[in-house]
Amino acid sequence: MTELAQERRLVTSIPGPKSQELLARKSAAVANGVGVTLPVFVTRAGGGVLEDVDGNSLIDFGSGIAVTSVGNSAEAVVRRASAQLADFTHTCFMVTPYEEYVEVAEHLAELTPGDHAKKSALFNSGAEAVENAVKIARAYTKRTAVVVFDHGYHGRTNLTMALTAKNMPYKEGFGPFAPEVYRVPLAYPYRWLTGAENCAEEAATQAIDQITKQIGAHNVAAIVIEPIAGEGGFIEPAKGFLPRMAEFAKENGIVFVADEIQTGFCRTGQWFACEDEGIVPDLITTAKGIAGGLPLAAVTGRAEIMDAAHPGGLGGTYGGNPVACAGALGAIETMKELDLPAKARRIGEIMLGRLRGIQEKFEIVGDVRGRGAMIAIELVEPGPLLPEGGRGGRTKTPNAAAAAALAKACHAEGLVVLTAGTYGNVLRFLPPLVIGEDLLNEGLDIIEEAFTRL
Image 1 (spheres, rainbow, N blue to C red):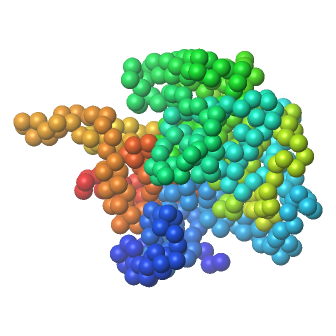
Image 2 (image 1 turned 135 degrees about the vertical axis):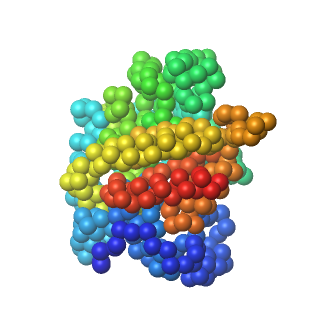
Image 3 (image 1 turned 90 degrees about the horizontal axis):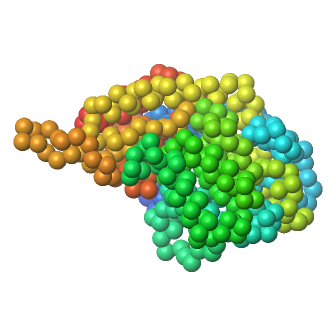
């Protein structure tokens, strides 16, 4: 493939005429339930850019929702997946196995937190991984209840919809949902009513009290939590909250599951986000960044827990597909070779510095947060108009309209950004970890100009 120029280039309006033609075809042939954030149809992508059918080159601050962390069409991913394609595309690991699956499991045992004996099972998607983590935890504990958290997102299957907090667009009209799922408070520092300094202790106390009183800790198979809530708005729980919940799980024989589907594989500046507070989960679920854009997911955990499911109880026709496994080996090779945790930390330094400068200038920026290359702005309504003009400080009233308007303005200028948040008021940024600093800063310039215009 010809090297893709790492530059923003707009030759038509966004979306261009060819993309608009394809969008009409999409509307006629694809179910309306499959939405599109930015209707530009991509022909090539790599590094920090996406090129569309009209010849526009857009800066990518989305990475396909944290998937192409190593860059799109990364050399090692393409090389290994292409070689595997030429050898064979599928046998089903449960019928006739192959080395690549085993090698991915070996890497996961090496890379995930903790030095205990570990095993893995491979699947196709993050939702499948979470669903199977629950199955494994239930098989191990012989219990049924599952505890999840406010603002959490875990997938779109029936069980993972039940685990997910937000109704629209994920759950509306799709019930009834799987039973024995219980939701407790998350330590959300920006919105904790008594202040961020009280958040970790109070949230953990409330969560544990609800589990103890309303469910009974002895009935809980698993506590499932994202170390940083993704779709919920890139909420980093207040320091101390995750260790307290992990300790409670350990004391009560509950399987502690870290959902690292969006945070994993170098995204937050460490291989896994739970390393930040020294959390060693019993099970960890991964997907998204694992295979450089190919569909692969995993549950990795303590060998004795992973072995609780009976032979034949785990699997799936495509789970651990050989081409996807080859892609994962290429992605892991790239992460190690380029030290992508360090690159993520550098991205975080640049983005947080620039975005906090924007926060000082614009009252609608309520919070700037995140770690590594997983950064967000929470937007709020401005304070009341004052007699002398201007506004009366910040509120904490969610401002979804501003998030939508800013995303639209960025898209028009050739910058791919995503929104998120329980209230729809968060702009989230997930650039590829290989993005150049010039493109990163140009993207931040576009964001600042969008705020100025708004």
